[in-house]
Length: 373
Image (cartoon, rainbow, N blue to C red):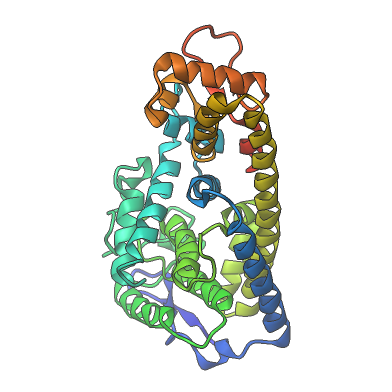
């Protein structure tokens, strides 16, 4: 099987020229790959089932997305943490970080989910997604947001001559993108295998000047969402890719060299590991909510009603101030502080900094810790 060849260009360097995609041999999967894909599908089905039991699932979704956004951005060199992004989102960020890159990723995924309800996953969609991801981001200076590149790019090194990998020149890139788009709409394939091949081929083509990795990882979740593998996109692989970053690059390099099976094993292992972790997190969320609901209901009927309103919001915005609670709930500033104080007394919220007297920030620490924050 040949996925492409490295061919010398007029500039003297070798660039990867993809073969027609997909080559017939690529879709002749080994029994080991098919068995692993079947296991991955069973676990994603189990994950889909348990996330349906999460009350107010839309509130929980933000944390799954924020976690993926954090790790995906960190793969590209962003230093900010999940906590930095949560603080920035809550409006309490005081130090200068690159956490805005994480929030652009969150915004792009939300845009993509909404857009897919009316528009199919396509090259136009990919350009729109990249525009949402990169416009205004710190790393967007040379990214040409929303536009496929019109010049040669490369990965590693200072120029194509000494690069670790040189993607297809523009003309070959455009042909490869057309093949990629057709493969998106191919039916009668196991969607998890298809997602793995789409990601590897997208990274091989590298169609943008910058942001290819983040865009490609977003497309995994959005492809599975469009195919209704999961009703809510709570299966994200960026933490797995970050944990095994060198192996991630090695397996993509194998793919560039026409060795697709090692990549597919790595990708499906990631689906299995991540699905199991997400199932565990979903169960713990349910247990935490049930435990904290009991604490709130013990406050009395009137206090419980305001407490339930705040708890619901905490699952989406786990870092709050009296001002933000007032804005979200409609309580007065004093009323918001009283509800917060009850939550602190019940060990639901904790002050971020005990030494601050006024304008305190509070964290739903037990919840954030479920996502590694």
